[in-house]
Image: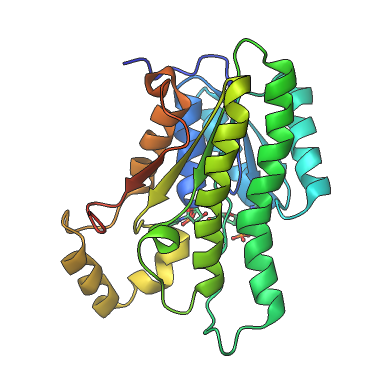
Length: 255
Ligand code: NAP
């Protein structure tokens, strides 16, 4: 199975920690030149430095994916540095906690703007480059949704659930429209992973016990276990996959 990404150029959004960090490191180790994006410049720099220290290639670019202007800068900085663009991983996400009856408009808007509109901005901007410049090689887009968007609700996270369901719908049409340019678009649906996003919940023994009961593999996922699936979707090994959703959840929501 060919999982090498030799000389490919990848942007990973929200890669300053958690799943995005693992994805950036796994893609870089597979031979890709990676742009580590994060809202937080220090985190992006740390991850890019760790990748280069291992002998792989990375730069850090701070940008808010909810800002179209900053997305343009992210894409153009990547092209100026590496001279091409082949892979986009839409990973950046936030998870505001608020019951619907108390949620204010700003919380709703910010969650949809980062998780869903950011995915649209980046897919459109990178899609244009891939469609018009990569006539032979095409491109790859991988989106990170959540089981909370398609399988089960998540308490007091209605905006998050809506944004993650939106990503799945958007990605399918994106896959259909981009197919003629040789751009494949797939979506990963993670279950529960040990990242800073779930840190608070993981400190609660009752929540941990519930997760262990509900997950047939009896443990949370490690970030690398999503990253390896993303690598597969970015590689030639998945050449006949587009418009797919791939659940990676230790069996939590099997149907
Ligand atoms: P995380 O630990 O919170 O990391 C997300 C990173 O994205 C943070 O460094 C964050 O920076 C950054 N970010 C936030 N808003 C951004 C923006 N507007 N522009 C650029 N970067 C931004 O989250 P994670 O657990 O690794 O999750 C990564 C993705 O997987 C998310 O889309 C999440 O919804 C999804 N997911 C996670 C799980 C899980 O169990 N962990 C399960 C299902 C799906 P700041 O901290 O500065 O905001």
